[in-house]
Length: 101
Image (cartoon, rainbow, N blue to C red; front, side, top):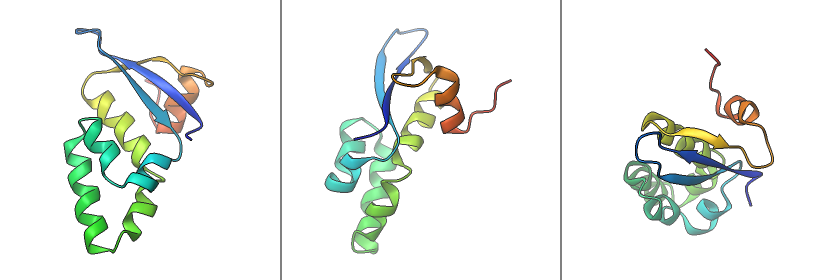
């Protein structure tokens, strides 16, 4: 399981999405299906193609970075971090590599 789960909220629609922060065990065991079920079509297709071409070795490598990619894609869509779970919001931003402005 990931280290913690952050909550992202869209400021206009008030839709909340949960995003694990840390290693993605679901991606390790279920390959591209977690991305597909989260509606992250671009990453699901990327994981599928890489897993087929590398005989699933890429699935192991992607498990280390997928949750971060998903969190950053939510931020690109306009979501903001409203709860960091076990960590503060500043700590979540630091783990994601977001530089404070």
